[in-house]
Amino acid sequence: MAHSSHQRLSASRIIARFFFALLCLALAGLMVFHQQIPDVMGLGLIVDNLAPWMGLGIPVLLLMALVVRGRISFIALLVPMVVWAVLFGPAFLPSDQRVPEASLQVGTQNVQESAGVQAARELAAHGAQVITLQEIGEGQEPEITAELAETHPYRYMVSTVGVWSAYPLKNPEPLDLGLGWDRALRVDVASGSGDVRLYAVHAASARPTGHHERDMMLSSLAGYLAEDDSSKIVAAGDFNATSSDRHFAPVANQLEEAHYSDWGLALTWPRTLFPMLGIDHVMLRGVESASLERLEIADSDHYALAATIDLGN
Image 1 (cartoon, rainbow, N blue to C red):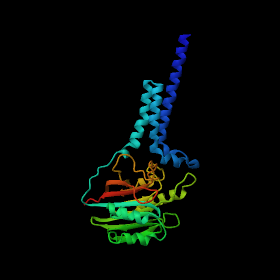
Image 2: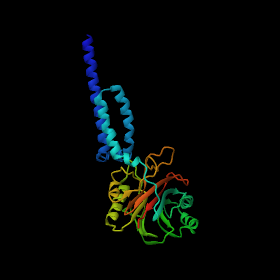
Image 3: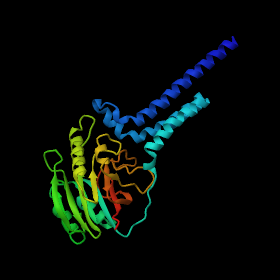
Image 4: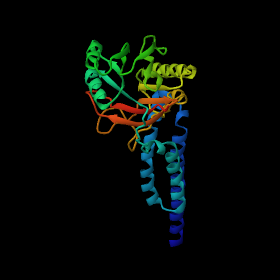
């Protein structure tokens, strides 16, 4: 009788360890192949943008491993741990915060219509030489321009997206990115270390119920970037997509993300005690990020970003 009970217990442990190993492999597979999940009823959008948060499943699996026990369980647990560390771990490490001699600081924020003047003032005070704001409210452009008249006399605005600069702006061009109306722009910033091509972007909103317009805008932006032969490119703004979003990948294939100076991810939305998504970005090509800071300024539902960019010689 005791021998039979022992056999049943051993069989139960074997089955439990088998299913535990499957859970570990499933989590690892989900992290690796999240962009291949069909976007049915917005599932792909949700999984893509929450992909880095899948690492929270690892402590849960660790507790389960302590219950299930067995060497194989802890070996299986290593699989999702290694996968998460490789895919998302580097983004959690802070960057070098050196300030090069030839640098340009770019500040960006979605100002939620009413916070444009305050955002412009505080970004300028922080040291941003180029300021790009998105979702600027009606009638706020003259107020922002007046606020920045002494320090950032050069400006270019398209619809609700604007750029104010301490350096002259050249070759301004509106970009509708397929939306049917302009919601992005590009302009050359004549910095002290040569021209920098700046793209200021406000992508359409993305919701599980629909994100076609955003996807189209990101794809169109990637097309512009692929054809742009400028030696130094910066793209900044509200992309309404995280770095792990499959539809952000075409942009990420063209540009490098400015690396956050602090531990963790530069999560910018919603601006609460626990923001969930990093949908605002500063993207680079031909230049390097010396630092990227997240700023809690102005009365907006987005955090601002300020990137110090190494322009080289």
